Image: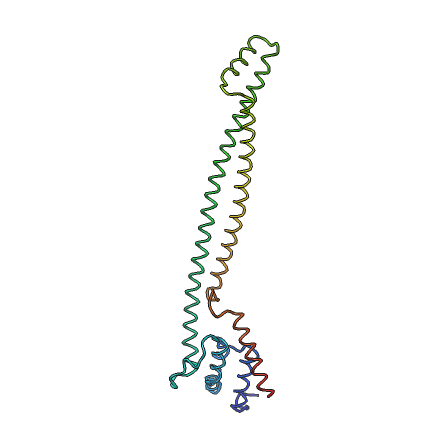
Length: 243
């Protein structure tokens, strides 16, 4: 059956049902308008664009914009669509800058934590070397009380005399210091893993935002709000039809 076989009233009702119940949007209406002259004329009907306007921009009542009767609802829809699109572009830029700032901050924290971890590892390395040296001194001190050849005994005495601090107390302090250094390094390594995971998540989020440049970013109109509004419109239309 061709389009000319149906009256205008039936075609208009088909389009209304599509908008009310089947998420027939402005793109569908524009595509339909280029198929033939008749559908081009019908798709420009003010009531259709009024329904689309109310469904897509519920926070902007069309009555506020209808002060001039010479402006069609289709033109009002186009004006509002361009403004919302511009808002989305600006919101997208803000979202990209915000996420890039988060990535830079994570990167700064990672560099800082890596530096502190390296310093702590170097401190632990030096402390461990001192610990080994003190253990040699303690062994030499004990060995002085045991009979040994004079040349060996002289070397051990020289090692002991070079130490000016109480060996046992210093060894105990270094053991505690090594334990603390190890805990610090483990804490830095854990913090590094957390920051790297957060930076990777931020990078994935940035890639997602850049892949969808015109979706809603903290705008008043959200997909959930639009869906809820369309549902309310369908419900109210159904009630009016039954009544």
